[in-house]
Length: 306
Image (tube, rainbow, N blue to C red):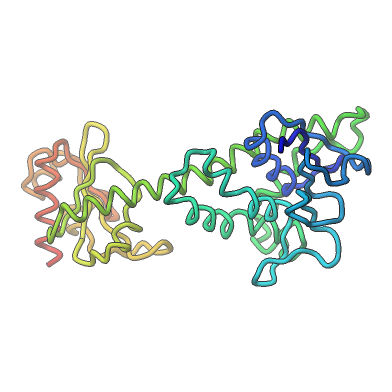
């Protein structure tokens, strides 16, 4: 079977069919993107995928609309938009096309669905309102921003909507790819952190080969004994604390109070470590000019914390 046409509706556009188009145009780059409400186009056929139009949802027939009644619902009863339907059907293939390792595809698919696709579905169906983000941020949700790329109501050009849709497509693509790439990077980081934890043994300080997200790996490993992390940062080295949660600045242990806000000679004098360069006033990061110096600072921080 060759998909020759990707068919969605003409006229004004919303985020759900725009984001769906991001997936489908990557998976079927040779297919023509058709925006039409003509019955000849929105009738299912083996050569096309139809989405956000057509009044049917039938994955086997390659038609993915959600406007009909009864409308398609997730297992938990929350409504799908066309984006959710396309993600459920083609999202794993899309992740594979983006070179996500096979071992991570299911986890990343679920994460993107829960944190990126579902909000678009809910907003498109009116199940939530953008104003629930707060009056200041109501106009800053991704669906609202994407729909702001539609042409002005009085643009006289017959192809104004189509041109605006095609211009918005790479903008939408950048957001989808960023969501996937960020999650794929977190999975790579977690694997590196787990390896570093195994190498560290009972050490209270975790040494990483570069700066990376590390807390998820630390928590997944159950390494409750770890207090600090060190890693190279450009030509310097950094010593950082480990936060106890995503939504808090509380840490397992803070850097010594005597270091807070100090730089260069003052920091060297307070710590007794040659090469100490900077400690943030919040005591969550310190910087030194060498690995030896940062490890010495880490040893001092551990001693004080214990």
